Amino acid sequence: MDAPSKIGDRSTSDVVVRLRTLEGRDEWIYCHSDILVEKSKYFADRLSDNWPTCQILDSRNCVEVYCQELDFDHHVNVLRLFYVVIDGSVDDLWNGVKNALGVLQVGIQLGCPQIVTACVNYLEAVPWEESEEEEILRIIPGMGSEVEPILARLQPVNLSAIRGIFISTLRFALSSPPSLMNDLKSSAQEQLEYMVTEDDDSPLLIADDDIKSEVKDCVGRLFSRFNNLLEVYLCEPAESFDEAEKMTLFQSYLADFSWACQLLSKLEIMRVLVNSWVDASDKIVAIMQSSPTVEMIGIKLKVVEVVAKVLESIGYGTVILLTTKRLHMVKIWLPFVRITKPLIDSVMTSDDDSLEFKIDGELWQSLESTFVSIILALPSVNQAEILTEWLENEHIRYPDLTEAFEVWCYRSKVANRRLALIEGGHCAL
Image 1 (cartoon, rainbow, N blue to C red):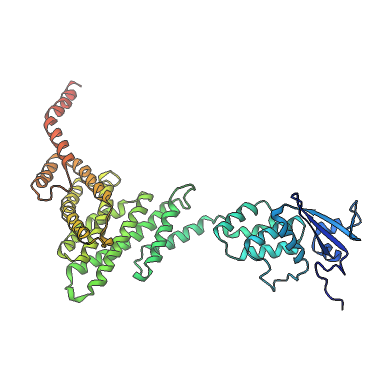
Image 2 (cartoon, one colour):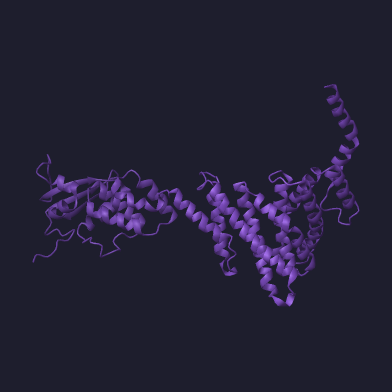
């Protein structure tokens, strides 16, 4: 049996492939016509009797191939692969994604179906780095149906699949998994927000009534578990449960509520959380007041974060509540906030390493502005009651209700005249 031909074997070669570039690079590669014709349509055409001219070089047929300098090595690799059995039994022929892309391009140019198929199978299966993915997106589209499998992982997903993964992720993100899974839960929450956020691209999912209903149900179940924990705090003796475990769970629920506020705001269904928080506010404050421990200070900080988002929805009209409920929220949370802020500030001042107690100063400012907004929307007699209590309180500096006080004074002073003018106008009509 004849020994297999080898690329570059001048003694058995009957054809020279002359690779040339515009920059002057010129390389002779000794090959075998039977292999070139079998593996490449381009070479089959060039070496056929139908080709009009045939060059001779070193007493052999010569096929000149011009290429760009960047593609030179890929052309050499393709010629070498002609001499390799590509049957799927060897996976390390390609030396990475970038090289495989170069070989694929040359393989298509030279009409090499076996090499093209092998490159496609490789590129479709291996992981890509971000830069490689961008290169694939630049090169592959428009190369034909034979390379389409490479792009399978980048194709848009149908709406049903998107809805399915959104709902599954949502249920996990609000399911209160064990603390060991906090990183997974945080990642799930981040991706849910990303899916419904409009940035340079449209949202991946536009929430319809069914999606909003699912979100409401998940938040409702989260609040149900939270209410059960509140009952444990209020009703069961301290020695009947693990205090540390209970506080960890409490903080986890509050962190979930804080995140849920962001999602609910994007979906314009903040009411579902606001209503539940209003109903639970008395219990939450009662528990906060009964536990002065350092661990509870961390929980109080989380409570402040959620309260700020809830009150913001109320204060700026995102969620419409009856006067009695708005008044109740001010009366219960204003004293809590004015006492909690100096407590948190003192911990931060005394312990510079207490990162868990650090809070954005803008949050306190935003909360103060929200209280002013809510108070100014209450009946004037309720405003007077709140402002009187504020002026007599030792924590008058925060929240600073000066703006509300000034507006109340102005409205009260001109009230009779303004209303008289309105009534006079009605009588004239």
